[in-house]
Length: 253
Image (cartoon, rainbow, N blue to C red; front, side, top):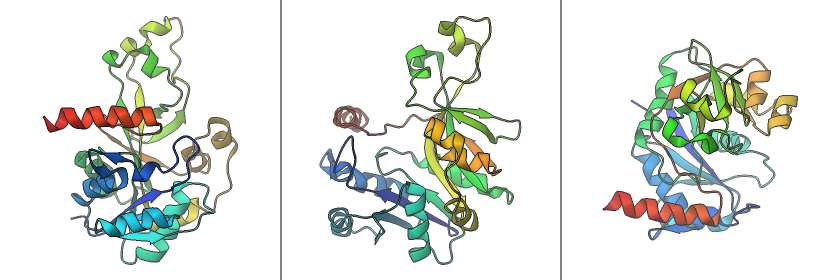
């Protein structure tokens, strides 16, 4: 069913906020191993793409597949493309899974893959509707990009700001008056499209918002959007790691 897909997990050791993050342990297993094992439950072909020997050795040690890539890449997308060139023969769709999402759900991977049932899909990603119980603070968090969709289920725009602006309504009521969508950073691309987008120069909107996907939209690419109701726990800081440990204890009870 997923024979044409390859899952690639970009993983860097160097990180300004949390160096060595992929090798941090959560419940006795490294973060990168947890991501790899989750993805492997859905996709038969999965590789970690890294630029660091320590991560390479760790993946080999737990029996995973790994490919060494350049340390000059500016984004996970670029790293994915190099890995795809090296190990993606015979695969037509690349799924880019964040290496800091140890609890990524199988349904989320399946949803983004299902977007490619439509032969016109070039790129795909996921969104999750904000619920009123999430609260206004979560909605206005600039580290949680919002997404506007068209009637075809394609992304019109991504922003760190809250979009759309509800004129004449108090901001504390916005989350109750409109369905806002939170971006979940899981991407998939057709192989030929991945090649093309990695050759595009950075765009003005991308630089303004610091969101790579705006480069693709600004250049006319359509991003198909799958809907998920599942929350994930991304890990950007040591504090997030503690939260992940607590989350693991809850789901193991």
